[in-house]
Structure formats: C-alpha cells, structure tokens
Image 1 (cartoon, protein in one colour):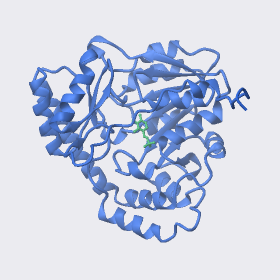
Image 2 (tube, protein in one colour):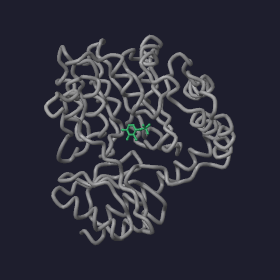
Image 3 (cartoon, protein in one colour):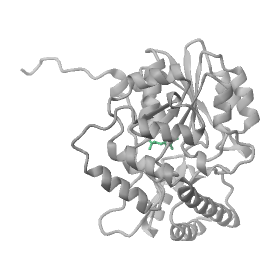
Image 4 (tube, rainbow, N blue to C red):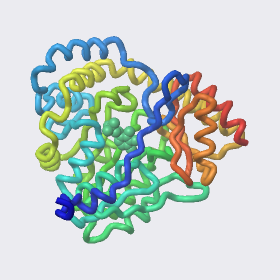
Length: 359
Ligand SMILES: *Cc1c(COP(=O)(O)O)cnc(C)c1O
C-alpha cells in the first residue's frame, strides 16, 4: 500500500491562493465587523417574511431558471429576461462566465490589487492570469485601463474591470472606459464587475447598462449581496447578450439559486426604494467617514463603494490588530493596506477614534 501513487490534484488547483474571508468576531467579543463589505442593516420585515414563507417549500427543488427573479430583475433594469443569468452569488456567475468562454491556456486580464476571487476563478477555469498593477501617485488605487488594453494578446479571452475597484474604491470614468473599449477586440469579453454600483456617486462614472447596450462584448456582473443586504443567501447575476447568456446558463450549476434566495431577492426588488434609501444612509456615512479621515490628514483613494482603503504597507497587520483590540474588525492585506467597510454609524465613530491614534 505504501508507495501506490496518489490521486493528483490539477497543478492549477494545488497552487490556488486561499480566499481569505473577512474575520468574524470571537465569542463574547463586542466588535463591529467591517471586514467583508456587508450591509450592516438587517433584512427588511417584508424580506424576512418572504424567507420564512419560502422555508415551507424546501423539500422541493427550486425553479431551475429562477423565472420570477429573472423577470423581476430584467424589468428593474429594462432588459429582456433572456439577458439575465442568475447564480449562487456573482462570484459563481463569474466562474460560469469564464467556463463558458475560456479554453485552457487562454489569458484573463485583470487589475491587481483587485477582488481576491479573480485569481482563483481564473485559475480554476484553466486560464493564465495577467495582472495589471493599479495606478500610483495622485491616481493611487485607480485602474490603469491603458495598460490593461496594452496587456491584451491573441490569447486574451476576457478582461475583468472591477468598478468600483475592491479593495481600493475608485470607479472607472466614462471617457477612459470608452477609450479602453475602443481598443479591445470585439471577440474579447469585457466583464464589468459592478458589485457596488448602487454606492457610486461619481458624476464621471459610466452607466453600466448604457455601456452594455452599446457593446455586444460587455457583460455586467451584479449582486444582491451588498446594497440589497442578502450576502448570506448568495444571489448574483450577469447581464449578457442572449447568445452569451445561454452559454453562461449552460455551464451553471443546476438549481444553483435556492428557493429561499430567489424569494428573498424578488421581495428585495419589490422593496427596492426602501433598500436604496438605506444605501443613501450608507453613502452619507461613507462621506462622514472620508471627511473625518481627511480632517485627520489622511489622503485616501476616492471611494465609490461601501469601504475605504488605507495604503499602510508594512504596518498593515499591526494596524488591523489595533483596530480589532478597539472593537473594529477590518480586512488587512498583509504588506499592502487595510480595507474598512462602512458599517453602523457607531462603527464609523469608533473607527475614526482608532484612525486618529495612527496619525
Ligand atoms: C462582494 C463582491 C462581489 C459579490 O460577490 P457575491 O458572490 O455576489 O456575494 C463581486 N465582485 C466584487 C468585486 C465584490 O467585492
């Protein structure tokens, strides 16, 4: 038995970086969890009622194509149901997008530092990751779209554009995105990851749906996890031309979105105004946080998401530990910086007291 060969893992899988979830608070510790860009507000009563109602039917498989949710989402966006593909969180939808278009050895271009799921889903799809550094200096934390365009080769199948960029916060601008898209070959897919689109207040930011309407090779990725506060139920979707959407659907996990999640998402769309009013509160608190930090002397990238980024270099882990000791759990990227989510108003107060001690 001793020397029999073992089942090999695919080299790409054995080499995968771990997805690091935002730390959770320990037992008994009172702490604000500002580490996962979650919505701090609990679900609305109408959404909780829809979830409770759906619980009675969990002996049945969900509607495989989530018809009601797809219809409601399409209606909310002004596209056809054929153009919407839902999945078990937009991370799963992104994995399905790549599976639908990437052959082993093809290249996927994306900014870095950006969303930590990108290297994982790219590697699992068999793709080679081509990471393009963010800009520096006055434009620190912004995507370098000219350099991303220049990184496209004959092997490139997909470019991921994270806007606003997680974890740094800036949104791309309309003019730079137009120039970029004009340089991308029409057979290369551009994924606009708009996980935080509801939080964007940048007048120069493009409307993703307008970009999508003009560009057949653009796919939008959106989620119910952040603004809609359903992170725990895992629902996201892609907006894509019908032919691409059908391809993404074909590789999707069958019954990938639970009945409970479908019902909750439909109820959330019905309560959209109420939920977007909460987003307004979070945006106001983001402004309060950013202005408080600016008053303390910090120069940070301009955030259009529900988090802010501190480039703290080698002091990152120490600062994260200090924040935790003070009652705020933040997300450190060792050697690079800290990402701090906008949480409850009390969390913003507390964090501002902590950041003041770092000046
Ligand atoms: C949070 C996030 C998502 C959403 O992930 P879900 O799987 O839908 O919860 C997607 N993209 C980025 C950049 C994110 O930060």
